[in-house]
Image (cartoon, rainbow, N blue to C red; front, side, top):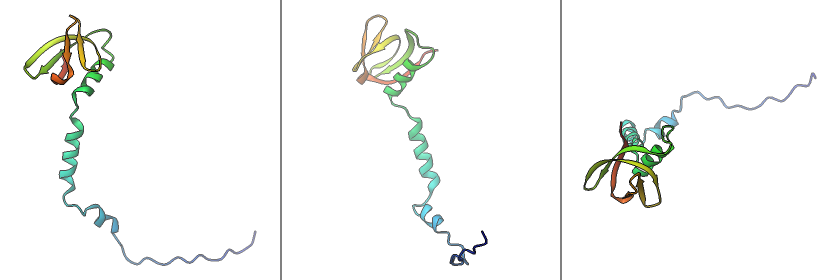
Length: 106
């Protein structure tokens, strides 16, 4: 085990390159872009909100929700959904295309 291995040539670096900084900051002010992206990610569409209501631990058979429609807002008790409508406990169908916002009622 007394073999001497050959030395590897390694060129010395005498200066700080900073290449990554120039590439990273090349498009201007990054803080504004981060703010825009974070607000877009916080906004949920109606289908995501409906899925959250149905997948919550509190939902067993029915959920009281406040629905904002194109022609006003109302509070309903929903029990299910199909591909195009929400189904209320009164067997009323609410079209998903008419829903602007939905949130769980207190």
